[in-house]
Amino acid sequence: MIARIRYNWKHNRKWVLIVVALSLAGALLAMVVGRYGTAIYTYTPGYYEPKDEERGQRLEQLERARQGGEQPSRSR
Image (cartoon, rainbow, N blue to C red; front, side, top):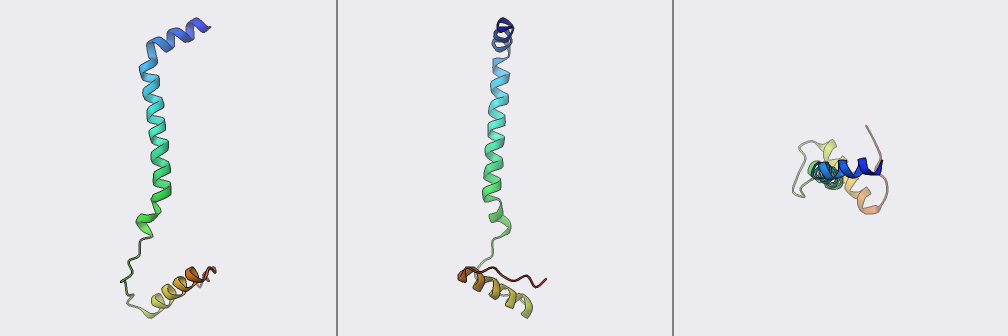
């Protein structure tokens, strides 16, 4: 049994290491995207002025809630 494992390891070492390296790289990439991926679609520049009153009021309410530490109310 051990001889068979050693034989397989000796002949397939390169491919096993490639698979392990690719798996680790994929896991690392998934962690990075999960952590920083939200920055792409949550970016709101400070100079943005909404064109409708309701949206402006909602953004002001969210900003006040964020600064005050309270949960914003869901009106929709």
